[in-house]
Image (cartoon, rainbow, N blue to C red):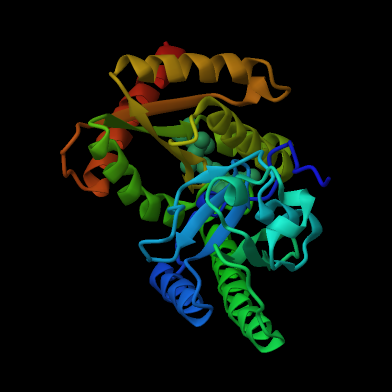
Length: 328
Ligand SMILES: Nc1nc2c(ncn2[C@@H]2O[C@H](COP(=O)(O)OP(=O)(O)OP(=O)(O)O)[C@@H](O)[C@H]2O)c(=O)[nH]1
């Protein structure tokens, strides 16, 4: 008997993409049309992702058992075989094949017939399946199977566009030197970060970092070492942040981090961790920085420019204090 894969699928999840440009309604229409065309009680677009086989779109019929969001990781369901072999599977009557005797789709929900095709990411790896399930034995003609293949190609093509768009967006949001967000990425993602913080009733804190005497480092060691300093600093900011925080190079030697923070004590913690991390890297002697911050309470609609001004002013005063201290 063919055993289903035990380990989670390694493929990227559609939810891991930064944009959600899929026309879900179009996919829903396609799935409903397939269910009508095959006169089948259930049609799905499923995704094989790190969680298992996940229903992304389900036909909108009262007889359709599984709903969008339901997941099957380990049992011997038909889709696992399509994904594993990256090939079409047509089971006319599961009763005739002992391979399916422990498939819960058959044993529990009486789906004796299955026709499924693999859907692919543009790099050829498997995205998931487009499948039709039936509680009666079926005899689909080749014409119908071909028609399903054409519909599957539409979905493949949507994924190609999505992937391309996501690549372009990532590129346009990323600072090429440090590989963190650039100004544009920060500005665009700020809104969704604010929405998230609002939903979670959390405050956000904008941290503004500016390297000290960076011009001198450039002059003393050359531009290439200067670049290394910028890269190291960005990497440390990233390491110090959580995935929901926004880390960006605002320009030259200025960096921003927008953190979800319970209170202002988080600023000190962030700074402490940053200083600790920097002290262990090879360029530590030449990476000094000043920082300032501004707080955005839940529901506060302060615009980015105002926040930046507050954080910049705070940074500037800190820098000045340091300069005065060293000149005394
Ligand atoms: N290596 C390198 N240098 C850059 C880059 N972008 C900007 N710079 C340099 O960063 C320096 C910033 O200089 P300033 O704004 O005077 O900052 P600073 O020397 O740190 O002075 P203080 O902030 O007052 O301590 C300038 O010399 C820029 O040429 C870059 O991508 N790579």
